[in-house]
Length: 86
Image: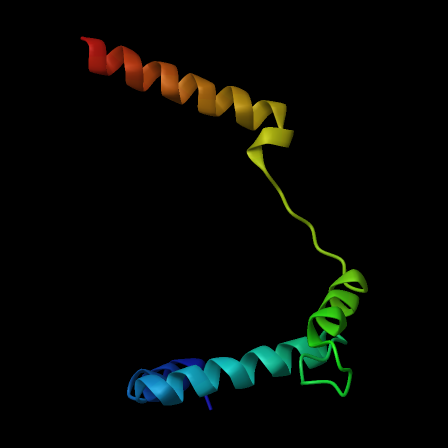
């Protein structure tokens, strides 16, 4: 089924069914990435989630760590302030 047809059908779902679809897709993507977000038998589910997160790798980008981005944002702010003061 083409994605545009699926999106049309999804937009017609009830609020609760949309949430169920989101949950289903989240679990499916997690499984494809080798993670399991299904409830575990562990007594401490928070501990289980933290263990899963430790085993995954995430890349987080921030302009604070990129000197060129910091300079670009600073230049934009200075230009906006200069325009506001005119």
